[in-house]
Image (cartoon, rainbow, N blue to C red; front, side):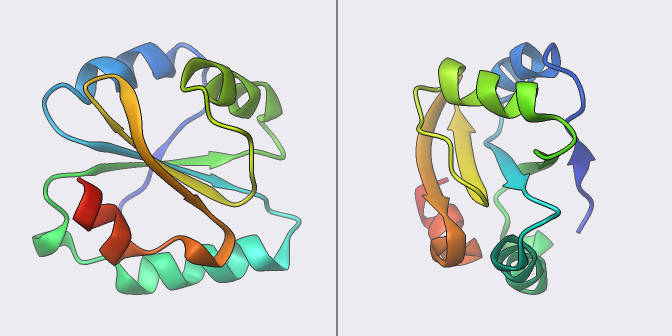
Length: 111
């Protein structure tokens, strides 16, 4: 799986624009949380590029970049959770899940 790194708040506007052409996934990961590590590993194991519907996956280290995580919650009107996966389409969050509910199959079903 080839994660794109989300490291700048300005990338959120680009992500919104990108999502008009193909869905975008934002995975917010806490590097200090074992549940987050387990959820991320499970998601990566189940990722299937040929079934991904062209989703662009972005990875956010929310411990190092908490202001971006806060801005994501604000911009997409989603309560912050960790770990959390958000599916963005046409500039809006159309699906989100957290903790062990994060699943490749659910993301694809909503894409």
